[in-house]
Image (tube, rainbow, N blue to C red):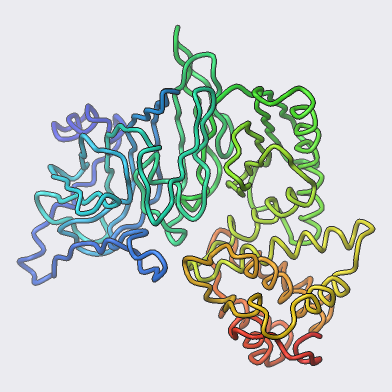
Length: 473
C-alpha cells in the first residue's frame, strides 16, 4: 500500500509504484550544528570551471527526449543521485530552457545563474548521503546554444547527431557533466515514425504509434556524460554476433549507394578489430560493440561508448583508434581534462601497433622518424603534453607526442613488460579514472625503475627530449 506522499511521487513519475520512498533527505540537521552548503557550480576541473557540480553523485540518467527535424528538442530527464554533503542547493549543467524541476524529497525552486548552470534549491536542506530523484522538463532548439566556445549540435531536416567532446550532454539532457561522475544511462528518443535512432548499448525496444516511434537504448555500462550520444535519421542496419560479442552497425541512407556500401564494409570489421585489441589490452570493457556512419560531417569521429560515430570515409586505422578508446577514454577515463593524452596518445599508439602487427612499419622505426621530423625549437615540442590547456586539448602534439611517449617507454622498459603494463593499466582502472601520475607510478611499480626523468622529458617539459637511451631513443 502506498503512503499519500508515495502516491504523489508516483504520480509525478519520481518513484516507481510500490517502491520505498527515502524521505531522509529533508532534514533538521541544523539543530545538531551540521553546516548547510550550496553545491559548487563546478567539480574542480581548472580547464572548465563550470563543468560538473559539487555535492552530488549521479547514479543513473533516464532521458526521455523528442526530436523534431525542425530543430526543436523537448523532453524530461530523471536523475537518480546521492548527495555527498548537506545541501541547500545544487547545480546541473544544461543549456536548453527549463519549464519545471521536481525533487522526490519535496518542493524546490530553480534558477539560471548562468546560461550553462541550472541551480536547484530545495525548500528545506537535503542531508548528506541521501538518494533522491530529480525530474527536469525542458524544450528548445539546441543549435541556438553555445558553451565554452562550442556550438556542438549538428542537424539537418533529415538527420541529427548529439556527438562531441569534451561537451555534448548540455545540449540534450541536464547532467553532472564531467568524466569524474560516471553513471548508467537509459536513453529514450522519440522521432517521426519513418525515422530511426541509434545510441549507446543495446536496443531495448521500439514503441510505435501512428505518427511516432520511441527508441529505448540502455545497458552501455557506467559512462561519462560526453560519451552518451544519439543519432536520428534513416539508416541501414546490420547486427549480429562475432568473436562472441554482439554488434550493431548503422549507416545513413542519405549517403550515396557506393559510399553507403563502402561504409558498411568498413564497419563490419569492427568485431575483428575489437578481438585484436582484446589480445593486446585485455578483455573488452563492455557488453556490446558497433559503429555509426552518418551523412552529416562534423569534421571528426568520436569514440561514443560501445558505438563510435565516424565520418563518411571510415578507415581501418581510424576504427582502431576509436575502438581503442573503449579501453582508454571510455573505460579508463580522464580524472581531469589535463590528462587527455592518456586517451588520445594511447589510441594513437594502438594505430601504430596495429600497423606493426599487420605488415607495416615497426613502432620503433615510426618513433625514430617522428622524432627526426621535428627539430629542437619546433612549435611541436612547445606544448606540455600532461597539461596542454583547454584551448589545445586536441592539438596534434597531444596525439602524436602522447603516442611517441608510449613508443619510447616500450623501448626503455622492453616490449613484453610494456605489453603487460598496458593490460595492467586497463584492468586496474577499469570503469574508473586515470592520471599521468598514476600511470607513471604503475610503470615504476611494474618495472622497478625510477622513470621520473623519462616522464619529465616526454610529457612535462615544453622541449624536445634529449636523444639518449634513458628517454627510449
